[in-house]
Length: 185
Image (cartoon, rainbow, N blue to C red):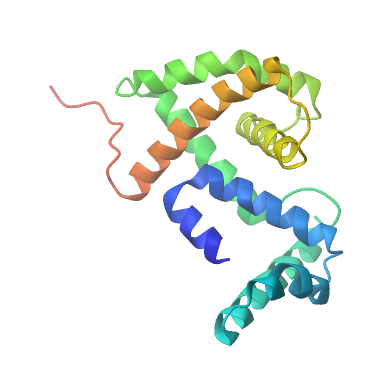
């Protein structure tokens, strides 16, 4: 939870990937708050107040996962909402003549996004969710020390550059610093 707060402020893409990992960790612990507490809280020897806050946060996430029916797979609505917000920003950035480098990064990544979408079960998912799926897959492969081929590394590098740029624009927008409107002549 404490990590998530900082990531939410600093980098929305990393925050989303972190939250997906939390969902998977909660599932790995069978959505049991006792197991979660033993595996995901106790090892950190937190002060009692922080420990209670973290346990409550995990407990709330577990409740939401059950209510929303994402016990075995899928993502919480709070995480889906981030993809929706990013998709809205993405569309506005593509339409804006003020950010040509963003469009260039997107179109450079697009063939890899399409290829990943076609190889995965992502045909029905929003395009940006496919990007996050690709980055999450790479992250998990690295954590598992699996061999990653050069094509996958090259593809995810382009997707990562594009998503990083989107995250930076998101942060600018959150701070009120992003202006995509055309200047009046």
